[in-house]
Amino acid sequence: MERQAQVIVVGGGPAGMMAAGIAAYKGAEVLLLEKNEQLGKKLLITGKGRCNLTNDCQIETIVENFPETGSFLYSALYTLSNYQLRNFFAQLGVPTKVERGNRVFPQSDSAGDIVEALEVYLKDNGVEIKLETAIDEILLEANEVRGVKDREGNCYLADRVVFTPGGASYPSTGSSGDGYEMLKAAGHTIKSIKPSLVPLKAKEDWVTKLEGLALKNIEAGLYLNEEEIKSEFGELLFTDSGVSGPIVLTLSRDVVSRLGTGKIQLKIDLKPALNEEKLDNRLQRDFKKYSRKQFKNSLGDLLPSKLIPVIVDLVSIPADKKVNQITVRERKELLQLLKGLKVTIIGTEGLRQAIVTKGGVEIDEINPKTMESKLISGLYLAGEIIDIDGYTGGFNLQAAFSTGYLAGLNAIN
Image 1 (cartoon, rainbow, N blue to C red):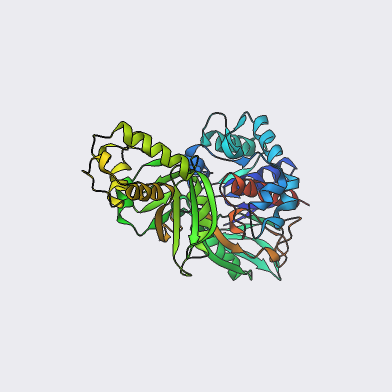
Image 2: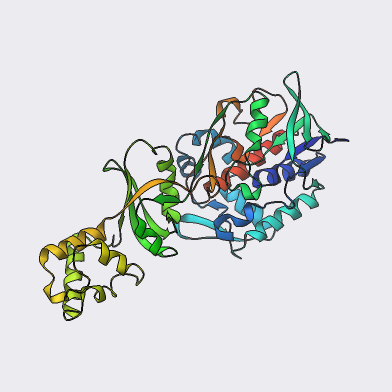
């Protein structure tokens, strides 16, 4: 079977839906092909189902949050900025709000509202949507795109193809990484694929006892061979095998590139608002208050109950020792632990739990002003398939929307 269209968009994620919508809005006949049974499957789980769709900051700040490749995004971001994106969804009936860290969410706290709004946008502009259609080949002729072919052998022909199949993270949502193989076969260079913004695995057994515990307003420093790389303030979550949460996901981007180069540790300051002197005074007050209790029963005012047994096990103070018998040396040891709880990182949870993919199509092979391939005429690339990955905070979704929008605009020219 053959099907003809002016513009074909492969992939119904944020980049693909935006590309298809704007191309159709500008008058093109657009066919959107999606391998899943629904559009926006991965988008629905972003931000824990709330969809952190962008960040309320200057464009320069967005660029800075893509450390190696951010400058590639200037044209896309100035074509569809974060403020324009918020206005776009507001006009579709989805107002947004700004939370801590300038993160932007729909006021409804529902990622489903974002996906539904995009679906309405597509249908209102006449985009033809074909679900459960897995593409496995880009059709070429003399370095020009001619369409794509699905796994059933059906061909979809067009002189303009916007290719947005996603990366390799969260494969359960359809991001299986097959897009990289298709582009490699077409002649593109694919930079090494790795997980980014991903939970980390810990060496210490005691982390399993803390599974599900979220620590807010703490500071975690990332160290390589005892040298600090960077630190983050915010929320950390213990998992069954290590640590996750917003600050860990941010730090994980720097962990991935350093695995195997030395000893990697997180040092968690459980009380960053208190310097050592103030924390010592706090400990002395608590110890005076609970002077007749055993040590294991004296930390309830200072720490979450689930964390107390772990801290008690990690210091040399006997759990049943009376508080009024704790020495200055022992109190100082406890203080150091509270200001630097060490977690040794031995790996990541991999692509199956990574929020985004690090690596992808080499950006030097893409025109940043149009998103067209420099190697294949008529082929436009957008979203996670490109070698652009940023920190957590809405930056990666903004990049997907902006590159998709820019690709869709230029695919009709």
